[in-house]
Image (cartoon, rainbow, N blue to C red; front, side):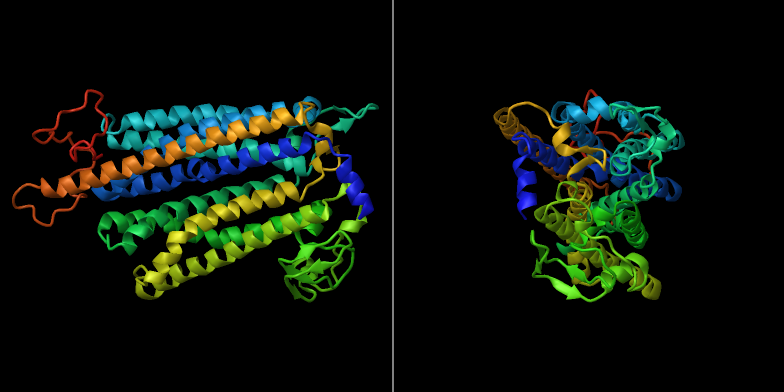
Length: 498
């Protein structure tokens, strides 16, 4: 315990505010990432379905989801740019010493970001202005651009967890950099696919959750059923895949980062027949209080046998491992992530069994209540995954090569706390604006749908918004509504249809 306190006392004063600022901006930005990475693919699935079936409702939903995606992308520009600056401003030791080794990941992400911006703009502009098939084909590269951006970021992060592709000279600086080895580190594959599938799962449940609320409120028209079914199906199919990938990456951490694994499972001493603790708190003397103890399970999960030897935190000096508090944080985050994943797996199996046995969607209000909260739960799981990854690696910013304290800026802590306060104020404004825009769009779309029903021509009783051709001539504007000069969507139903 004395050694751990000595380590904390030696930490620079600016370390806490720098960590707090980086954690806040990263946690805020990651809320938007699933919509940016996975929503393009989900929307294109719906768009393709609408074109194939001539389904106006599917095309209407696809167009509206693309509008939400454009707003999300604009907000992501702000939060992502702040993060980019923070790497250089808060961690100059990291970028100055190691930038030549792993910086290519950030370069790939930047190029993917600009490509994604262009593709979103072209696709949004193409509604009603391009032939249907050409317009759809122009959208197909967008998911690839989003995945390329994730590729760059995950390449950089996986390198920080398992650094490769360099040798150190006499002064300890990296030389003889091998780019391909630096990109494709041992953890890159498991970490990348775990992240990508997590984005698909989260985006699917988030979007489906919006329509699940509508279904619970009695809006059981085809618009809400389709808006729920497509993203939820994608998420439900990917949930068991994510469960397998999650187990795989945990096993990779066990082999490649044994001390991080010890923190995730709060294992104090190296041993076999190690018990599994569900939650619980690790104390500086190695004792564990609270939680549920399951004998031998940790060894079984790590190596499929109780005889598996699990490395403990005390296998390395106190200054080379997470503190008891950090280990507890990583452990709780890991358990929450796994717990949410398990519940989502049950929800996906519920959905799948009802469909296989009865060829229909589950009708239970409890199913839709669970589906409504699944999106929020997925976001929490993503946040917990990043907490596990970053806190479990402490005190290293580059695993076993550079400590966080060595990389932090020399800027005064007071200045960093002021910056932190300003960033919080800006982010509150940005996310409040994002929410206000989404609510405004929802209100406008709802009014447009109501007007579309009321202005249906005589003899069209029972006609639904999906009637008509998906890419036909632009309908005439109803009397009393002036056409927009920019040709964009307005509150009039005729202009708010694809």
